[in-house]
Image (cartoon, rainbow, N blue to C red):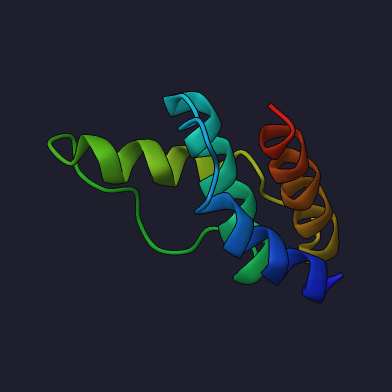
Length: 83
């Protein structure tokens, strides 16, 4: 699965249409869960809107295995690339 995951990471940079914010957060969360695992550290402060949104998205994937997260990431990138 990691080869497909790495390939999807390359392909996501070449998407013809930029994903909307929610999809970008979903991609980020699946990428982090698939490469690092459950979110660690403390939630960014109130004024760090971007960091806070990314952290919150990542925490929604808590408990998802790395393999499952990688598989979902590849599926999402495939879907976006098909548009």
